[in-house]
Image (cartoon, rainbow, N blue to C red; front, side, top):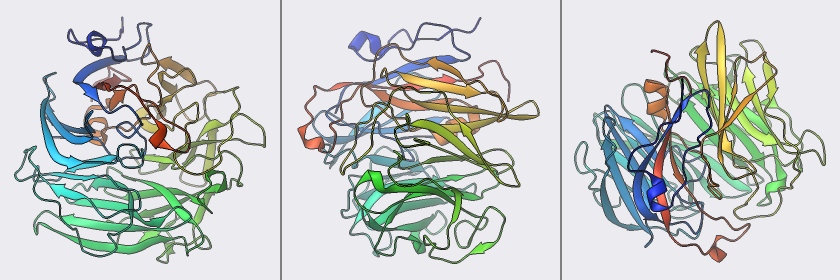
Length: 444
C-alpha cells in the first residue's frame, strides 16, 4: 500500500505545512530546513527560478532568505534529513518577489548563486571550493549588459559547464541574454547578447530546459507592456549546439535575435485571455518539448492549465484539469492569483509518456495532477499538503528529477500582495523540502 511518509522531525512540529494523509498515486516526504524564513512575499518560493534547489552527486544544495533578509545556503546528503546551513553576508530586497535566488552546481562541484534582481545590477558569486557553502566576493560575469538584470536562470550542460539566462531591460521592453561558464577555463563568456529581442516594444517571458541529449528548449510568451493582461502567444525555439545557433521545431534555422516576426508560434493566444507568464517547459526522452501555463480559452472563461507539446509532426494542446472559478489577470507589479504557475514533468510509461503538473490549487494546497498519456481524457488530481501554503509556487530540482524521478521543491507558507509586495506583512514561517515520488515502486 502506497502512503505519504513524514519524517519524525517534521515541519508540523514547528508550525509549517503537513503532507496530505489521504492515499495518492505516489509517496511524499517533508524534510525541514529552517524554522524561520521570510514570509512577507513569495520571494523564497516563486516559480520560474531555475532553481532554488540543485543536486550534485549525492549532495543537495538549497537557498532562501531568512527573517532578516539575509541569503542562507544549505546542503545535505541525499541519504540524510539534516541540513547544514550557512548565512551569507548578502541580503536581498525580499519585499519584491521578483528578487528571488537562483543557484546551480557546475561539473566540478562548485556552487554558483545569483540573487536580488529586478532591473538591477547583477548580483553573482560562486563557492570558494567544490562542495563549499562559502561564497567568494560578488563579481561580474562578462561585464556586458549587467546593469538591468531580471529573472536569472541557471542550467547545467551534460559536460558540466553552466548556462545563465536573464532579461536585460524592463517589462514591455526587454531582451534575453545567454552566458556560458566554462569549467575548464573558470570564466564566463557571452553566447548570445540578444537572443530574443522585444525591439523596444515588448518583452519575452521565458523558460528553458536541457534535455538528455544536451539540446536546449526555450519557450516564451510575449508581453506588450507592464500590464500582465497584454501577455499573448506561446513561442518556441531549440538549440543543438549549446546556444550558438537556434532553430524551430522542424529544424529550420532561425535568425538571431528572434523577434515577434521571426518566432515560431506553438499556440496563438490573444491578449486579455489571462495568459500567465512565464510558461514552464520540459522535454521527454526523445527530446520533444512540453510547455505549460494557464489561460482562458474565451473571454470570461475560467483560466485553465494547458499542456502544449510537439508530437514530432505538429504542435498539440491538452487541456489540464477542469476548473470553475473565474479570475482576471491585469495590472502591473507582482500578481496574486488564486492558483500558482505550474511545473510540467514527463516520464516514460509503457509505450507513451505520463504527464505531471505540480501547482497550488484554489484551496492553497500543493497539488499534483497526472495524465497517464497524452491521449487520455482524465487527470488524476491529488493534494500533497494538508494546509494552505498561501502564495507558494513550485520550482523543482532538475537534477533530482532527471536522476531519481523525484520532485524536490522548497515549500513554505507565504503571503503575496497584488501589485505591491511592500505592503506584505507576515511573521517568519518554517521552510522545508517537499519530496514527491510519483511512481515510488518503479525502478530506474
